[in-house]
Structures are given as C-alpha cells and as structure tokens.
Length: 380
Image (cartoon, rainbow, N blue to C red):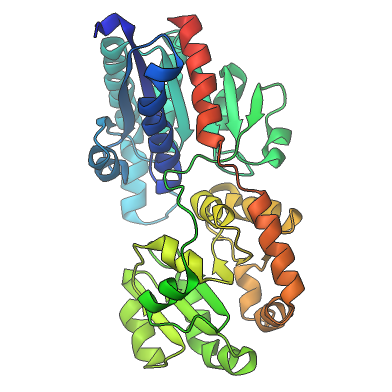
C-alpha cells in the first residue's frame, strides 16, 4: 500500500460525547468503505481535540490517534477557577494554534471534518488557512458557534435537523441526520424486561438523565414517583447517574415497580422495554431514541450552550415525536397531567412512536462519507 494512495482525514471536535461520537461514527465508516467505494486503498485518521475533554479517553479507546490541544472553553463561572481559566485562555489559544498548524502540516490531510465543540475551532480555522477543504457536521437544531463561524467557508455542512438551515443562510447544507455508532435493533421485550427484573406486561417509563444523571429531574421524581405509580399503574426504569444514585436509592427504598441504576451499559435492552422516555434533549440521546422509535417527554437542560437543547426538543415536538416541558415548569405540577395524557391514550403513544421512528436516518453516516470521498478525490 503506497502512502500517497491513502486518504488522510483530520477530525476536529470534542468536549462532550455529542461532538465526539458522530466523529467516531464517520471515521469508523470511512475505514469500512474507502477501499471499496473510492480510488483510495485505505484511510488514515487524525483526531484533534482538547487535552481536557472526554476525547482523551474515547478516541484512543476506539483505536485512533489524538492530537490533544491545550485549549479550554470560555468559563461562564464567576468563581476564582473560572477567572483563572479565562485569564489563561489567550496563551492556550496561541499554543493550540501552533500545535494544530504543525500537526496539520505533518499529516497533510485531504479533508478536515469539524464536528463542533470549542476544541474544534482552532483545527477548523487552521485547516481553512492551509487551504485544506473543510466539511462540518452539526448535531443540533440551533447550530453551535463553530458551525455558525465557519459554515460559509465549508464545502458542506451536514445537518441533523432541517430547522438548522435558517441560521446558516448562504451555506451549502445537506440534511443527513446525526451519525450513530450503534445501529442495532430492538430486542425481545420479555428478555429485556427480565434483564432488569421488570414485568413485560406493564407499561414502562424510562427516566434517563444522561450518563451523569440530571439532578433536577432526579429530585422531581424522588418527590413524586409514588403518586405517578399510583395513578398510572406503570413501572419505572431509572438511570440516576452515579452521583445521585445513593441519594435516590435512600429516598425511594425498595419498590418492585422501580428499578434504579447508576448507569446502564446495555442501552438496547433499556430502550426495548421502554414505552415512553423522560430525558434531556442532547443530540445523541435524541438520535438514539429516534433510532428505536420511542416517544418522549423532553426536559431540556437550561444551562446548555445557547439553549440548544430546547431548540432540539422543539424540533422533536414539531415533528410529533415528543412533548416538551421546561425544568422551571416541573415544580408547577404540569408533569402529571402531561404524563397522564400520553400514557392513558394508547393511540397518542403509538402516533408519537411512529413520528419518532420517522426521524430515524440510518443512512446518515454513509451519506456523509459519500460526500467526504467526493470532495477528497477532487482535492487529492
């Protein structure tokens, strides 16, 4: 295999799983298809990210090289640590530019794929300055800052939601959906129920606060779960997050209709027993629940950058796949009527499930790879 016949792709993204996982999905798909679907004999990948984010673990675990930059996001905290972080930002920025430039010149990619997060800004900017073609992949309904900054200069911007187009006027956009690494199907409900010690006959509410849990959601359910169970005759599978698990366990005690887990690894089983989701509106969570065709009640994280989770949630609601309730409305008693309205109306639940499944884009990763190959072949 000659090195000049290898497709070299740089990926820029990080900070959270929502930016890293789509990049990994695209990189893994390229490994699978490059030799079969292009004149290239193989692919070489280099990831750029922060030396501080989840990418330092996730990218090496997936078997890829990471060029870790000393970059951090701008802190919105008024604490001393936040002030110190912002004070060091200019120095870190300059160091990151120098390091990214050196690595880009050594690697000489045919194309750079930016998937967002503060860690992607420097490599995307330096790629453009080095005349390396750039494509961007945007997970959210309201595009992130890096996408908004560089969209006009990108060869293509791949969108998860049609709604994102209105913020990127003049850019070359393509709605592909969000790439997903896991693409398995639902498994048998009875065996899924058995693995959690749940009853396959009972309607199941799956409360998912993300891998870290969601404190406000957990506190709400700790106080009201017995009322919900009593009124709706359901059972609950509840991922609390590791930090809140002991607190929730202590408050709930033992109840055969509530299964608490700090973290659920076998998500396909959890999604397969769920009839309705209650969760945040992060991009990867929504991609997964659409993949499994699940209806949801979405409680957007109010502190998410540029309130992007509410934009995501509203896009799902507009499509008929979800209902949105803001965190501030939880205390006002609005949740029980909403839960009752959905859970006691089988037709509504079915319609929402169909709408969720209709948002599924199983070809997202392939579509993005096709476009990357097309652009890379013309720049090779």
